[in-house]
Length: 287
Ligand SMILES: CC(C)(COP(=O)(O)OP(=O)(O)OC[C@H]1O[C@@H](n2cnc3c(N)ncnc32)[C@H](O)[C@@H]1OP(=O)(O)O)[C@@H](O)C(=O)NCCC(=O)NCCS
Figure 1: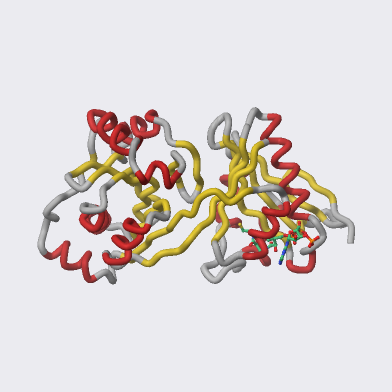
Figure 2: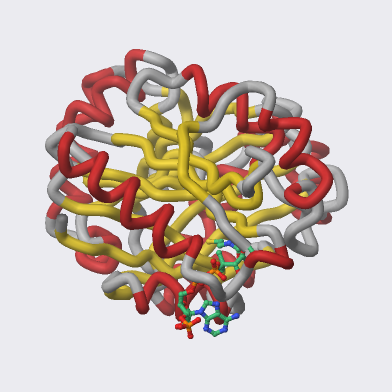
């Protein structure tokens, strides 16, 4: 079974769809993201094609910053697995990233996905951090309904201005959350180093939230409120999650999704605020 690697093209989408739509129990995002991936200026999408030029595997690399290459969306057709295709795609995207100036390649794998963990370890990636995806449907949340019924929360989070950037960055820089996250934030499940300019940009776009319980960066995406960074303290963490939930309800978001580094007190706070949690492993490799 011969294959060769080539750049993906728009017409590949419908050929990929039959076997990349239900990859996981929750579905998959490859087909929905495909056109955006192709159009993105700092992105490269590769496929492995069989001898009729039909794609049998796909993977994407994107530069999240000049230094950081993010790898994602690696899918190999079930009939084509264990032939080294994922590894070849990964290597080619790393070469491309290095040519573009990237110094490190990063990717995330759900902790139950042993095949993917073994495959990226085989490629020389090192597991560095555990992230938690804490999520909750606002419609079915007893807390959210109670909050909405009782009006404004006790300690509301408000969309804030750049005046909050300094205090937020300072509090986070020396914090346990910063160390656990190794200085990183997430944007739509993609992890990269956080710089003070990220908080400035968030404030400019109304996405920097501030209140007595701490700070967060949260923005609407589809029907969700997505929080990719937060700073709080152990005594305020439950209140912080509740305030984020209240904001999601008032924004009419169907779900609230928060990415947090795996720190025991933060995880306990999320659980006690009724969030469900999934564990994601961040892998890194120097290029
Ligand atoms: C994970 C996945 C991409 C691997 O693709 P692949 O082309 O079969 O991987 P490779 O052939 O390059 O594997 C290289 C090495 O990785 C490890 N590996 C790959 N699949 C494995 C599995 N199912 N179990 C254990 N180790 C595995 C092995 O060490 C393998 O070397 P070997 O075959 O010589 O033993 C593929 O199984 C897949 O598409 N899974 C569904 C989608 C998915 O989970 N994507 C990753 C999400 S982050």
